[in-house]
Length: 67
Image 1 (cartoon, rainbow, N blue to C red):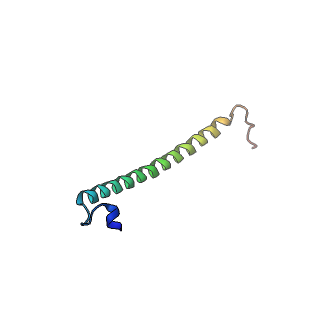
Image 2 (cartoon, rainbow, N blue to C red):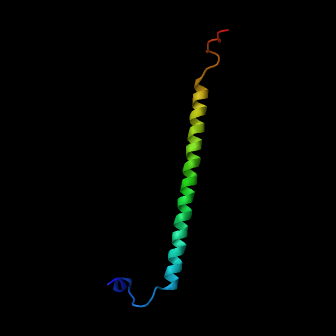
Image 3 (cartoon, helix red, strand yellow):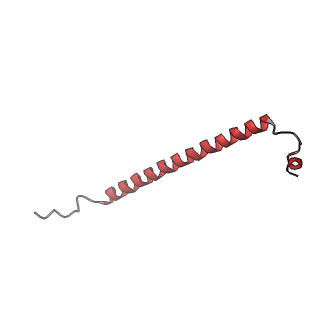
């Protein structure tokens, strides 16, 4: 039944196998790129959040430190 679904009785077509390997490698490459970009995005978001906190502190209105 499985052979009939594939459309042939013989062994696997080497071109089909090569294309499948190429596509699997491409998927792995894209997944790796996605992980890298997500990590970069998280770092940029954290840096932007830190910058917003620093900007919200008004040094001119801050009270002097107790000595």
